[in-house]
Length: 131
Image 1 (tube, rainbow, N blue to C red):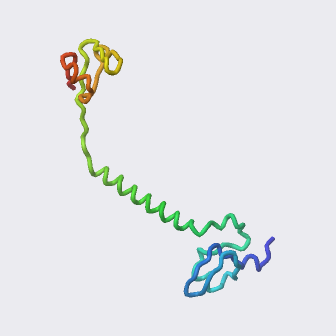
Image 2: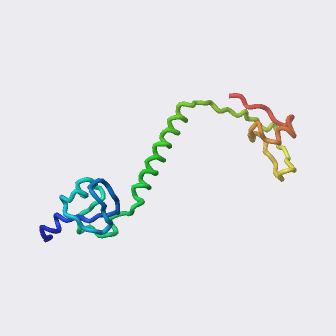
Image 3: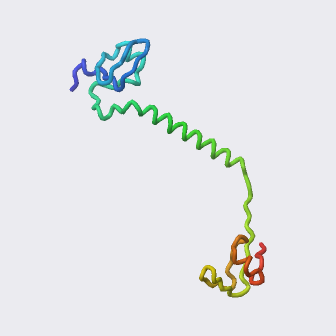
């Protein structure tokens, strides 16, 4: 069982200064000290192990993560508002086509996109696919 003084004693988890004075990391204070009352987030129970105190940068990291999440939410909202339809014309091979440049044979009924070089080289071997 903890003593009454341990229950009412807190430890400063990060150095800081405010109108109530200067808090020093690792120093213990009574729970009703003006520094504790003015900045309660800077203190933990005195029995808290040091590895659970966190670091001075935890707040900075948290604010960056929060800002990143807010910016990401804004980008998602903007993307949802910017609705576009993408289309690609597709062509079907009417016969086997040998592509010497890429060392391949495109089989009859295979499909390619309109930006494929093979369509430019052999336009007579393809027909446009219509929906």
